Image (cartoon, rainbow, N blue to C red; front, side, top):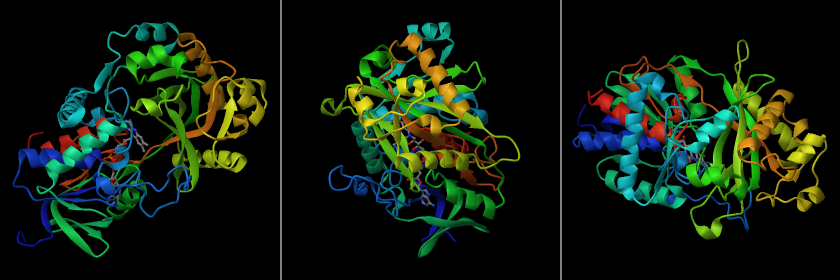
Length: 461
Ligand SMILES: Cc1cc2nc3c(=O)[nH]c(=O)nc-3n(C[C@H](O)[C@H](O)[C@H](O)COP(=O)(O)OP(=O)(O)OC[C@H]3O[C@@H](n4cnc5c(N)ncnc54)[C@H](O)[C@@H]3O)c2cc1C
């Protein structure tokens, strides 16, 4: 068996942060190990989204999305915010313990810094005066340290990691795994035109591989759980209003418990001096945000999402479908994303071009002025409005009439794969890590899960 060219000690499916860090740790600790990494997308330098903002302005629905797939995974062109915390970004700690999870996130941070991140900044909420101010206003500022690599440095770190792995790991790019089968030698991963066999297998297929992951679980009768979706809006306001927070913390995760329904509303993905962008997932257009390190790309606005978590109980199971349908409603009314002034929302009237134009906040996204109250369920909208007023107490001006709300923003969650405390399925040697497992939702947690499983395979955990 060992002589066969398609036989490996470990096969890794997916070259996002989870896959990269499991390969990195295995190579570092056991250089003789035969490892294959199979990735649906291309090498880092081959990843090019056709949208250039000039000739091509909208998503072309490429067969493989260069933003989500390829070496570096979904995070390759992200702002590269590595949050070192158990308070958000996933529930890895529920499997491996809080102390271990933090230790591994710090370990990943050290590696990132060593691979070109030395000049980047680590922000922290520890000892921040905002913690108390938030508490006094019924807001909970979650504890975290965040390493902000920024889009450009994040790319260089990934290139350097690739150079280190190249030659030690066999990469199969443009190779979408279609099926995994358990056989006497381990696990066989099939792709168009061939297969590889691994004594052990790590599946790290992220959000883009979620549907396929569900299929794998069905094929192998692995238990799954799912029932959460986060729905809300993206808020855009003058950067000066949030500058006290963003200058000190860069990204602050603030949670508010609504008085009316006792729902949790939270800030998510804060982009100081950034832009609001659209995202196309399977033809459904939602909103997101970006920020840049380069001074010439910075805008005068800050944007962040306000999301309400919806957990469903039996018999309803399709939480992602619920989120998709709300997004479809905004697409139906606005042809894409809808934008509304906070003042118009409060008055119960739609925004129009004139009202937006006359407002103080210049929108960074060309969205359709409309009425979000015709799209978002009352309970969700009420929660968002309550939180905007709560935020206004710590960052006065948040509840200004001209503050812009874009909708809808949806954060889909992968179903959670039935795993033990070591992220192993009921099949010995078959591990599922990163966002594809439903356990993690962030760069740092996904990367840490990769290191953990590598060490587990090597008998260290
Ligand atoms: C625009 C954007 C910005 C973001 N910004 C941040 C941020 O600043 N901070 C943060 O913490 N998180 C951020 N995230 C989320 C973060 O990128 C993910 O949490 C993280 O990448 C998850 O890592 P992963 O390895 O689990 O999965 P992914 O990064 O999704 O990688 C999975 C890989 O598996 C491949 N794959 C899927 N199916 C198959 C298959 N069948 N066969 C072979 N290969 C397959 C995919 O092509 C992909 O490359 C952002 C995400 C996006 C989209």
